[in-house]
Structures are given as C-alpha cells and as structure tokens.
Length: 128
Image 1 (cartoon, helix red, strand yellow):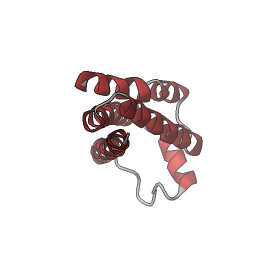
Image 2 (cartoon, one colour):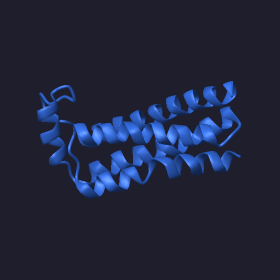
Image 3 (cartoon, helix red, strand yellow):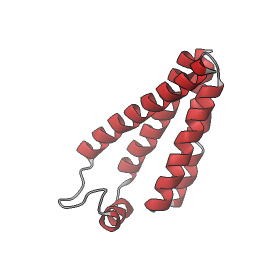
Image 4 (cartoon, helix red, strand yellow):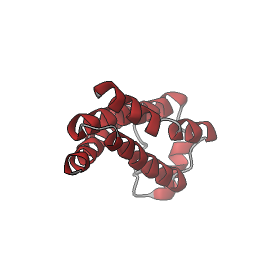
C-alpha cells in the first residue's frame, strides 16, 4: 500500500511538472497581455475567452501529456494500476475546479474531462 501511495504522489508531481512545462511553452507562443495575471481572475478570464484555437490546443496537450506521464510514473513507482487511476482522478478534480474558476469554451471543457483518467490509465497500462 505504501508503494502505491508513493506512486500516486510521484505520478501527481510528474503530471504537474509536465503540465507546467507545456503551458510555459504555450505562454511563450501565446503571451498574456501586459498587466494580465492569473491572480487577477476577471481579467484573466476575459483573456481566456479571446484565446485562439492554438493556445487552447497547447493547454489540451499539457493535460494529455501530464495525464499520460503522471499515470506512467504512478504505475512504475506504485507497481500497480490503481495509483495511475488515482492520479487521473486527482487531475480531473483539479481540472473541474479550473473550469469553474475560469470559463472555457464548452467543447474544451468536455474534451479535457474525457482526457484525464483514460490517459492516466493508458500510461499505467503501458508500464504494467
């Protein structure tokens, strides 16, 4: 059980690092306007509404890569599939919170919610 918990922790950290890395690249390609920061919720939400498709695809790619990589690391360290599924569930919970905080296009919300658990499962399944 401890190994599985460690796998869940390692997978979650790996997922967050991958998501952050891809989103940092996205911010270089699609920079925020001067004065807009994630801490200024209303301005940030207004900016998100204006994002081009490419920027949203970068974010989606970060969730795909993060879920897959997190599931892979979780299963590798945890030596079981359940840590990968827990990572996918944690990412989905965080994704839902983000969708409530910052409005996104409906298609994006649906697609991202369909990504987390299946991709984490796939990453774990490949390891095992």
